[in-house]
Image (cartoon, rainbow over all chains, first blue to last red):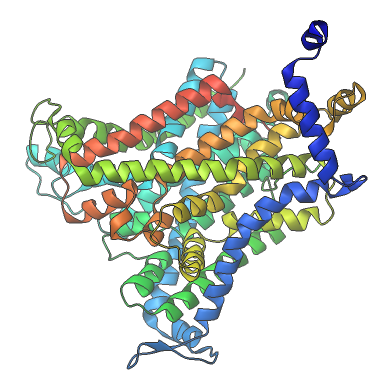
Length: 314
Length: 266
C-alpha cells in the first residue's frame, strides 16, 4: 500500500480525475470543435461591443423631440442630414482629419530614427534605456501626461516663468491647435516606435552594408533599401497612429481647452451636455465610417502591413 | 559599420529630441510634486514632501485609486483566461473562417475608442448595471482584448506542435498536456499580456469617463475633473502614483520576459 502511494503521487490522482471529467463532458471525436470552444469566450466578450454598436446604430436613426425630450418611434436619416449640413460638425470633422494626418506624418518622422537606432545599436545598455524611455510614458496614461504639459506650457507654467525671468511677456502656448497636435504627437510616439521596431529588426544589417559597398550613400540606402523593406511596419504604425489620433478625446479636451474639439469631444458633448443621444450616435457612426474608410483605403493601396493577429504561416 | 557621420548626427538629434519630449511631462510632474509652495512655480519654491502627506489625507483620491485598482484587477481576471484560450486557438489550429474571426476579434481596435465606450455604455445601461465598478472592468477588458490575444498568440506560434504530440504519446491526457506543455510554453505571452491589460485598464480614461457616475469615479477621471478647476501640487503627487506603478510594471516586464521581446520580428 505504502509503495503504491509513493509511486502514484496525489497530483497524478488529481490529474486523473480531471482527465476523467474532461473525457466525460467531451464527446469522442470532438477535437475538431476545440479551437471554436477556445475562441467562444473571446467572441462573447467582444459581442458586448457589437450589441452596443447596434444600439448606437438604432439611436442614430431616431430624432430628439425638443418639446417632449422623447425620441421618435420611427427611423429617419434626419440626424445624418443635420450632421452634414451644419458647419459646426463639418469644421470639427475637418479639424480632426487634418490633425490626424499632420500627427501621423510627424510621429513617423520621429519614430523612424528612434526605432532604427534602438534596433541597430550594439550597446545593450543604450537599447534598454531607449526602451524604458518609450515604455514609461506609454504606461503612465494620457491624463497624467497632458497634466505634465499643462504645468510646462500653462500661462503660469515653466516656460512662461522662465521667459518672465528674462523679461519676456507671457505667451499663450496652450488651448490652440498646435498645442493639441504637439500633445498628440508625443502621445503617439511610443505606439509608432513599437509598431515600427519589429519591421526594422527583420531587415538584415548586411543589406545596408551591401548597398553601401555598391556605392550608395546613406540617403540612397535609406530611401531605396531600408524604407521599402520597412514598409509593412511603416503602414502598420501609420494606420495605428492615424486612427488613434483621429478619434482621440483627452488631448483636445485638456490641451485644447474646449476650443479645439475633435469629433470624439463633439460626440461626448452630444451625449452628456446636450443629451441628444440620437445626434451623438449619428456622429459616432460617421466617425466609425470615416475611420474604416481610411483604413480600407490604405489596405487597398498598401496592403495590410504588420497588422494581423495570429500566424499566417499555416 | 560604415554608417555615415551625417546620418548619425541627424538620427541622434531626432532621437534626443524624442527622448526629451517623451520624458519632459514625467520629470516635471515628479519635480512639481516635491514643491513646498502652494502653487506650481518655476524655479521651485523648495523641497518638501508635504503634498504627499496631503494626498494621504484626501479621501476622494484614496478611494478613487482603490476603485482604479479594482477595475484593473477585474480586467485582468476577465481577459486572462479569455485571451489566453483565444490566442492559443488562433496560433495552433487551422480555424475555419479564421480570418473572419480575427477581423471580428480586432473590432475593439478598429472601432474608435469613443465608439466602443458609448456602445458599451448603452449596452450596460440597457442591462441596468451602470453605477457598478465591474462593468468598467469588463469594458476595459473588451477594448484591450486584442493586446492579450496578440501577446499569447505570438508566443504560442513558437511552440513546436510535436511537443504536444510527444506528451500525448507518453500517455498524458489532453488536460495534462494543456497544463504541463502548452500553458508553460505560452507563459511569457500570458505575463506580457496580463501586465499590459492591468496597466492599460488602470490608466483607462475615456471609457471610465463614459461609464462612471459621480459616486464611483476612477483615478484618471478624478485627475481630469480636478485639472479643469485649478492646477495644484497635490495633483502632481497623485500623478506620481501612476509613475510609480508604471515603473514597477516596466521592471517586472523586463525581469520576467525582457523588454527586448517587443523588438522581435514575427
